[in-house]
Structure formats: C-alpha cells, structure tokens
Image 1 (cartoon, helix red, strand yellow):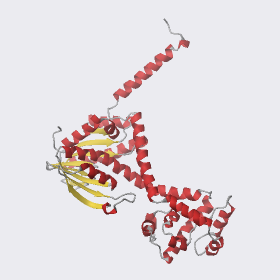
Image 2 (image 1 turned 90 degrees about the horizontal axis):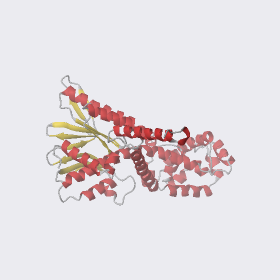
Image 3 (image 1 turned 120 degrees about the vertical axis):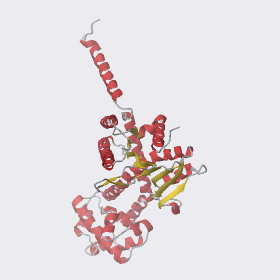
Image 4 (image 1 turned 90 degrees about the vertical axis):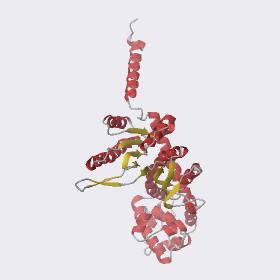
Length: 418
C-alpha cells in the first residue's frame, strides 16, 4: 500500500535510514574510540577525583576555623584604631569609609589586618594573603616568606607582622575601592585565589593519578608472575596531614620485590604518600622507565633529546618501546593531548632514524579519545608509526582491554605473554 504524507511512513523510513547511517559510522570507528557514555564516565570520574582532592585540601587548611576566627574579630574590633593606624598600616581611609557605606556595613577585619592579630593568630596570614590575591610563591619571591606562619603556626616578629600587614592592606584597599564588596565578597576572594593556586596542584595530580592507574595494575601483573624484581620510586608526601608524617616525602628509593612482598600494602602506602614511579625492574634484566629523558647523539654530533612518559629498556636496546599517556578527561582537550603526544612520538622516530637506532614500538594511552583523535590514531597505526592505542577508561571497564594492555607491555619488556 502506498504511504501517504500524513501517515508517518516517510518520517519513520528516514529515521531508520538515519539510525542505520549512524550505526555504520560508529562501526567504522576504531574500537578504542570513546563512546559518549565512556566520555561522560571519564568526565564524572575526573570531577570526583579533583573534587575529593580539593575538599581534602580545604579541610586540612581548616578554612571553616579561619573564617570563624575572622568573624570573631569582626564582632569586637576598634574602628578608631584602624583609622588612626591606616597610614602606617597601608590602609586607604577611603576604603574604610567605603566599607562603612555598604548596606549592611562590612567589618574592617574581613579585609584588613593588624600586626597584633597576625602575631596572636599566625594561621590568619593564610587568610589575609588569599584575600589580597597573593600566592605563597610570590611571597617568597618578594622576601616575605609565609610558610612558617601558615604551615607551622610560628608567630612572626613584630617587624615582619607589620611588613605583612602593610603589604596585604595596600592591595586589599585597592581591591575594595576598585572591585567593590558584598557581605560575602571576602570569602569569594579568598576561595578564588586559593582555587587558582590549587589549580596547578590539581592538574599535576590528574597526570600523576593517571600514571598510577596504568602502572599499579602492571605492578600486580608482574609480581603475580614472579617477574617484578624492584621498584624505583619517590614519594611527594601527603597532600593533607597524615597520621604518620615520618612516612612523608621520600627521595628516590628502590624497593626489592619478592613473592613475600605485600604488594597491596605497598601500593596503599604509595597512594597515601603520592608516589612518583621512576622505574620497574624485571627478572629478565629489562626496565620500564618513566619520565626519563634520553640524549641520543648522531654521527654529526647533534644531540637529540627525547623524554617519553614511559619506555622499555631491553637488553642493549635503550628504547624498545615508548608510550605517551594523557590523563585529562575533558573531551574538548582531546585534540590538544593528541597533538602534544604525537609531537613527542615524532621526535622519537626522527631521533631513532638520525642515530641509526631500531625504530621503537610506540603507543598512545588516553582517558578520552574523541572520534577525530581515534581516527588519526588509527591512521598512525596504518602508517606503521604507532603500534597500539589504549583507552584508559575502557581498560577499567572491560577486563579484556586491561588484559590486552598488560600482555602487550610484558612483551614490550621482553617476555612472551602467558
């Protein structure tokens, strides 16, 4: 029976064709391409990791306690004292008058400090520094290091307290006059500056945690087979105060691995004290090196510097395999991650050719591989520039993907996968 325009047949047919085309397009993508669900999952995990990290830091810094202390000061301060000390303490009188005119009036201690307050409460240096939009690094750079006051609660001398107050107050005066205030603006300013300083920490942690998610399963895999001989590592220390600070930051150290080694306990300690892996040494004499820079010299004397995220040293071949890892979960950044990785991998290929070395096998590992990146990566495989690609999100969702990665890396280390 012919379909009429208004019977929905044409629309259904077009919808079916559209779905068919979409399915065909999806089937053409490499298996390691991230699906929309996998991207959402990766973004969710990344948000959780970053959120937990920042909450732990905020709790460890006792932000609530500091704000309660500032509010306490705001309930019992002498306005005349601030006006009389304004010039000496770097406070603009117009800024104090501005705070008075706000409805409701804003207490002076929300923005301005006095030396006796910092001497009595050294931890408030942290609060007033952040309100003034200053970082600890900047303070060290100008000769007003605040680490002892903020971290260890050491009271500053009267002279140092005056210098700190004057500097903080000068900046806060201009911020008040030019930026304006609200009843909660001081909290927003403090948290905004704190968040900016923690942004770098958070980004570094994303990369470090991604490396753990790759290396920890490999450590277990190698130890279960009796192939792991030792681990070379360092510890950055707890990002928040730990129960036993004696187990904090540790410079580069080697731990020998035997069948009796409690791998789970070791990895738990590594996670708590923020491990940086440097090398895994295995029983056949091979090594997996991480973030290790190599310098290859060619016949003309030119030095080629390369530094992949990880590479295997097998026998007399100092780079049998190399891999680039990108832990960021933002799909908008997937292109940039791929570009950065391929630049590093291209340098390795050029250096190997220039120095007459065997071409290393190369891999790309990423938390998210959007469609265009996945297709480009497959093109690299087709050109024999890339050996393999691993989707880190898939590795943790599909057992066969994790097994593929672990088996491949053991082969890259000179073993035949069992």
